[in-house]
Image 1 (cartoon, rainbow, N blue to C red):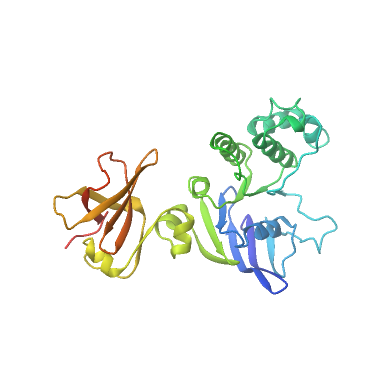
Image 2: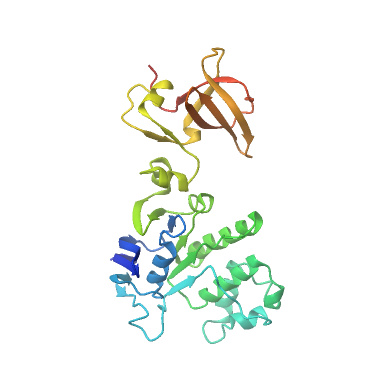
Length: 320
């Protein structure tokens, strides 16, 4: 029996299809990311899983028990599923410990552990109007965890957070799964937030599942340009363009990441020309042109300059 089973979920609003026949399973403690462009149906799917939105068709089961929608439940939601929306709210002018109010739910020891995992134990005496955005978000998550959910749903949790605050929240979310043994689903559009965290990624477009696989599969073997573009820079090389860089037997158009291209300087003038070099911290991004072909290349080597002539090849490909 799957921990979470989503079976043939469809949702329509007026004449617009929001979700079309979505099915998948999630194992317990498996970290799932739902990715896609704005309007792809990510948040709607999360709300249906949480029992906060009614689907037109299909069913959701958590540990074999049906998750009822608001049309089937007097109180919307499921006791074992916690949902953090993008518009979470904390009651104003109260101390954090008053907002959390855990006394009737869990022991003081359990609460202290949750607060430690969420990194808010030093904030309990502060008032909510004295908190930063990142602190408020961690408190909102802790408030959900007091209910001892089995499944935590996070809708774009890193939006509008700076790099330092985002790093703290990433650690907190990691610890929620590892230390508190809570299964998580995250909705996000930022590849930096998802590739390193996820066990599996499901990509939506226009309410349809476009691709579902491991982060490596999604990044290295995207089914189309839409999926490739969601997770970083890519080059789309035609058969003739692949032959230009020495691919022996191209089978069709190929999506290639910048780091999958090998580069070396050349003394031959009729070669690629470096038009731009950008330092990106752990690597350099180069823009190359040759005839009508423009290519993005990533390298860790600090030895290329605008105007250099270079040769390129695909890593792992055979030359003529």
